[in-house]
Length: 235
Image 1 (cartoon, rainbow, N blue to C red):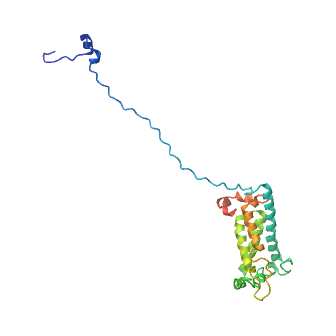
Image 2 (image 1 turned 30 degrees about the vertical axis):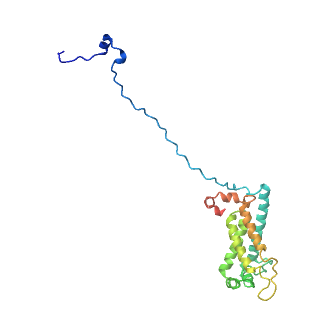
Image 3 (image 1 turned 60 degrees about the vertical axis):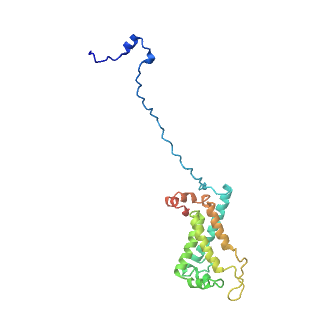
């Protein structure tokens, strides 16, 4: 060691010299920043809107099994009304259609009715389409389709729409609000607004709402079809 060099005190030398331990120069240890483990915050899901429960297919919306059975009886009875009208006009069973005047005999299922419309603002329209081939075809297909759908219990929603449209056309042809025909004779209308056409239309709508085809019908099987399941209006 040279003269100009100074010796650094060591810890042992400090002890030996009697230097108190508190007076010793302490080098502070580097502070390591604490690593905070942050948990990912859960994203709060928006409140889902409360869905209104749809009626389970196979059970009536209102009431229980008794309502389902009553609705099934009304459904079949209403369907038979349309099916009978179709068969009578098709073969001429001598009820509403005279024998030998059926559609299969060359007769027209619409000419006799529409050509004799003598009340209401649509007289000329009904006279024009009376007995037309497309008119007869559409009318007979409507009677057959509505009758089969109601009797079997399938496609009651579409049937309610089609049946209501058919009943509205027939209501307009008879025109219950009129008291007299164009000939001056009384129309025989007993109610200017609500007649059997309106009752039939309301019955078909009610049967669709009550899922009446699921009791004593093919409504459940029909609802399971992929096409019907994807398009609920076909139920």
